[in-house]
Image (tube, rainbow, N blue to C red):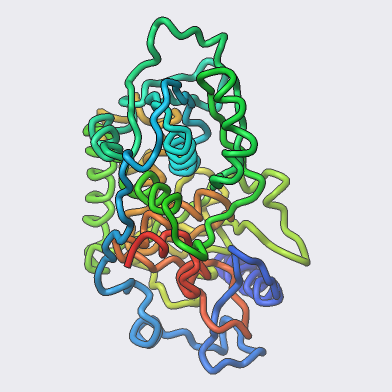
Length: 407
């Protein structure tokens, strides 16, 4: 007697769920946190009887903070810093999740040195990929946000040779002490520097004691970068399309950062000790467990459809990639380019629920963007029968740096 394909799929999904429930992970930023109804450690996909209405009523799958928070940083004055004649140049690299951190470090360094900050160019992942700042971001908004904080120039003066500018690396979330010890002596000697931020770790923890540097970082990270009009229009049109497809859930949709190439990299391999990435099948099981119904609209950050996403679409038919919802006249320019990362970042920031299938800086900085607007439904897909909840620890513990900036 032949087996029904649906029976095979159901068996695979059930087996996968048991494997996931066995992963008792304790990870700082990617905490596994799911409370199964009844709290039984023996609960499984069949016996737990997950009822979507019951779960939504008691946990609030779609509901974030009632109101957005307000910026509570104090804009510092340039009069507090001795002005010098040098310049700080830098480039934005690796995508918008890095841009936010890079811009903050550059502003902090330029202000500390009393230097003029030069508007950065943007570099892609491939050699030779280069764009102007205004190709992605609104340069006027950025310059206005920096008024009274640090001097900004659109270009380096022609009389300054780039060959005479010293290259300096600083760690992300650079401190004034680090600048004074490692950066200022080079700046005083050379007159100008080209800055590069490196990331020894992903550190988006809330600041312990607020100071001038934190206010500058808050402003730079959350008050200086806006998309240029065309990019903004593309993101808005995609979000609107997703909301139209979500009529059965009051126009609400989920964004999942799930990129097949990242899942295949070494840092995303499964382990019995810790797990930092989740594939489409595991995400599908997670969604079913916590109560999302089959009509839920899901946006995934993979550019074009990949067969590995089929298991997610089987349970949630309204699963889409950029290729499916981007306006046709925008695909030639924005698909298969560095612009994709920007679109993913801002769609993820606008979604009603955000689910990071991959741990990393994208997750951390999307969370920061969402906190100020009250979009705090950020669900970590690491189910465990003994964990208390499945909210991101950044939100449940209110320990993200953004909580230093909003109140």
